[in-house]
Image (tube, rainbow, N blue to C red; front, side, top):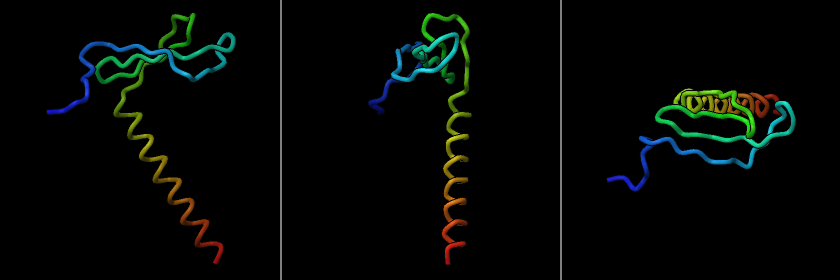
Length: 77
Protein backbone atom coordinates (compact mmCIF):
# COMPACT_ATOMS: atom_id res chain seq x y z
CA UNK A 1 0.00 0.00 0.00
CA UNK A 2 1.40 3.38 -1.01
CA UNK A 3 1.18 6.53 1.10
CA UNK A 4 1.27 8.73 -2.01
CA UNK A 5 -1.89 10.24 -3.40
CA UNK A 6 -2.78 9.34 -6.98
CA UNK A 7 -3.69 11.99 -9.55
CA UNK A 8 -7.16 10.75 -10.38
CA UNK A 9 -8.49 14.27 -9.69
CA UNK A 10 -6.71 17.38 -11.01
CA UNK A 11 -4.59 19.21 -8.44
CA UNK A 12 -3.66 22.86 -9.14
CA UNK A 13 -0.95 24.83 -7.37
CA UNK A 14 0.52 28.30 -7.72
CA UNK A 15 4.28 27.75 -8.14
CA UNK A 16 7.21 29.90 -7.07
CA UNK A 17 8.42 30.05 -10.69
CA UNK A 18 8.02 33.16 -12.83
CA UNK A 19 8.37 33.76 -16.57
CA UNK A 20 8.00 36.57 -19.06
CA UNK A 21 4.84 36.08 -21.10
CA UNK A 22 2.89 39.27 -21.75
CA UNK A 23 4.57 40.61 -18.63
CA UNK A 24 6.32 39.01 -15.67
CA UNK A 25 3.89 36.30 -14.48
CA UNK A 26 3.78 33.49 -11.97
CA UNK A 27 3.30 29.95 -13.31
CA UNK A 28 0.33 27.81 -12.29
CA UNK A 29 0.82 24.02 -12.47
CA UNK A 30 -1.93 21.39 -12.61
CA UNK A 31 -1.34 17.63 -12.28
CA UNK A 32 -4.11 16.01 -14.28
CA UNK A 33 -3.62 12.27 -14.67
CA UNK A 34 -0.48 11.68 -16.78
CA UNK A 35 -0.24 15.36 -17.78
CA UNK A 36 1.39 18.41 -16.29
CA UNK A 37 -0.58 21.47 -17.38
CA UNK A 38 1.21 24.81 -17.11
CA UNK A 39 -0.14 28.31 -17.61
CA UNK A 40 0.73 31.84 -16.60
CA UNK A 41 -1.37 33.49 -13.93
CA UNK A 42 -3.92 35.77 -15.58
CA UNK A 43 -3.70 34.06 -18.98
CA UNK A 44 -5.80 31.29 -20.51
CA UNK A 45 -3.17 29.71 -22.79
CA UNK A 46 -2.30 26.25 -21.46
CA UNK A 47 0.75 24.11 -22.18
CA UNK A 48 0.29 20.37 -21.62
CA UNK A 49 3.25 18.01 -21.21
CA UNK A 50 3.29 14.28 -20.55
CA UNK A 51 4.98 13.63 -17.19
CA UNK A 52 6.76 10.55 -18.57
CA UNK A 53 8.27 12.72 -21.35
CA UNK A 54 9.56 15.20 -18.75
CA UNK A 55 11.17 12.34 -16.82
CA UNK A 56 12.77 10.90 -19.97
CA UNK A 57 14.19 14.33 -20.82
CA UNK A 58 15.61 14.74 -17.31
CA UNK A 59 17.32 11.32 -17.49
CA UNK A 60 18.83 12.17 -20.90
CA UNK A 61 20.06 15.55 -19.60
CA UNK A 62 21.71 13.89 -16.59
CA UNK A 63 23.39 11.27 -18.78
CA UNK A 64 24.59 13.95 -21.21
CA UNK A 65 26.05 16.04 -18.36
CA UNK A 66 27.83 13.01 -16.88
CA UNK A 67 29.27 12.13 -20.29
CA UNK A 68 30.44 15.72 -20.79
CA UNK A 69 32.07 15.81 -17.32
CA UNK A 70 33.81 12.50 -17.95
CA UNK A 71 35.13 13.75 -21.29
CA UNK A 72 36.38 16.98 -19.66
CA UNK A 73 38.11 15.02 -16.87
CA UNK A 74 39.77 12.76 -19.43
CA UNK A 75 41.07 15.79 -21.32
CA UNK A 76 42.80 17.27 -18.23
CA UNK A 77 45.27 14.37 -17.89
